[in-house]
Image 1 (cartoon, rainbow, N blue to C red):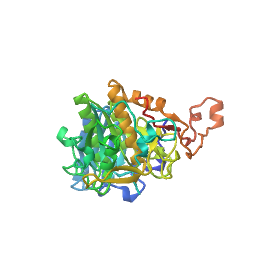
Image 2 (image 1 turned 60 degrees about the vertical axis):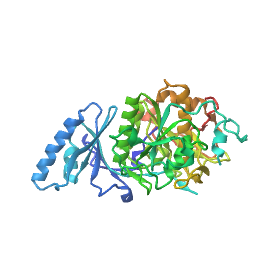
Image 3 (image 1 turned 60 degrees about the horizontal axis):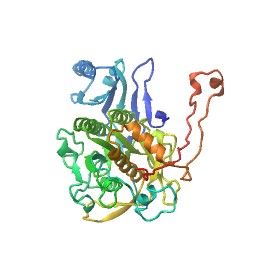
Image 4 (image 1 turned 180 degrees about the vertical axis):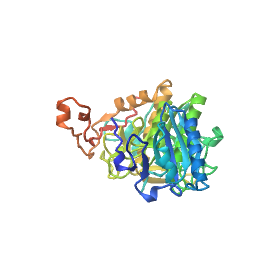
Length: 427
């Protein structure tokens, strides 16, 4: 079971007497914009429009009294993914304090930046995931190619002119879904390279796991490799809506990471809406449960291994990890070149191996749900194949357990990493 260790990633402000908590970023460099934009998570059974209306009434009163500036705003952006509902506010502390008393608000979180999970530095990864044994045979043999499946690459964009995407293999999400609220401009052009590399591993013509999948560039990260929580939640909302209306099977790859609760709620909601979400575990050699969206309970969280079947030194670990995949010295398409390649390392490189595998499974199992996908990944995986992941079992309160009290369960979460390595030979 995934446990969100919020104490590691956010500061709680004025959480008392049942008031909605305000979650502030613990690192100033991660704050988006001027630090006055917040994401409000509305309770699932509440009417988000009524909450926004009440917030605007409060804001108007505060502005009239000179307690909020003229650029303050409530609800300029509203996002709904299944039952998960959010809206943004831009304000000072007085409005925050007032909104904390609204019983329909679950929490308020400062908008923060998420980053591409990349460690800059052979096709050994493909060779490894199609067999159980570690002695690679030099081939990648699978019986599917992901045809008919959409892979949404939430990243820095995709260089569609690279030869690994020739034949119209990669398209801009905005061309499919014009109402997409593009958070990084109007083009999916990749001026960073991260998204292009990731996409080539998911489904490139020569370097991909699923070489028939439809690659869709959803640019949520800037050419500097960062993007706001608000923009990423909006993208998840639009992708889930597109998947629902198109009726096509899809997988979302999120080779990015940060901290906070909002992004976890949104990623879970996308899964509950029927789209499998694959997320990088993170590159801090730390417990993945403390990062987002890696710590979200319903996403597929992917840790990284080396070509020696060992934990990659940078890879996050712990009970939130669902599966391990190749993530060290991975060759992929090099953006800005017609056919060049580049070797990168990171859990960003591990996640797309899994996203590609999900596409293979969905091609051959078109009625599969995200729960079916997770079950397949776990069941078909190679067990106890990767060395070096830390072992620290959960600690329990003996007195609580003796009397069967609720506090018995996971008094102190452990960091045992499920030792399951990706295997696609059963597809």
